[in-house]
Length: 114
Length: 115
Image (cartoon, rainbow over all chains, first blue to last red; front, side, top):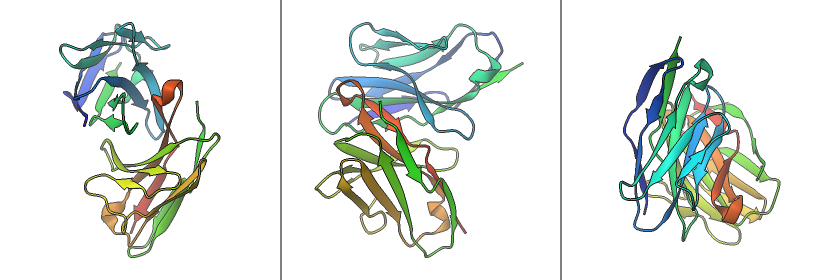
């Protein structure tokens, strides 16, 4: 079975500042890792994913995450945030064998202030 | 990728009644998943629905409360039975698709309010 821990429930940050949203996972098998974003009153959108290969993955809007197997982490970073990045961010994990179900963390609310 | 349509998008229901949520996918998929997102919280998996077999429920969820149908590879329904205000949530349908079925795609969700 897999589990996900997002260490911060809320992260307030000023516009143009860097941000890191932390995510740790637990699994007895190899995993695929995901970050999803949910803007206010909208559905879930995939932000980025790690399946295999390069441990650093990037999104089209400037976010990146690094898979660290030894620390079982998949932290999300952005060097300079915008007001429009204000949203709920969910880290998720799926084992690469078996039932294909995706398990989500509790979420981190990123609040970007002007 | 996969495009998922859910109906209804929202509903307000009386306690003690039941609501059936429909999920239609634009391609054939092996597994479909139903999640619940309670206000201000994360997504919790209710069950996995495979075509041709009974759904597999997660701990804390039972078939009598959340019966699921999966008549074919593109469609599923979730019924929320004998509703109470505690069932007020967003219910989301999801499928695994993309590269090696590694990615979860979601419908827009059904926002249910029980009064």
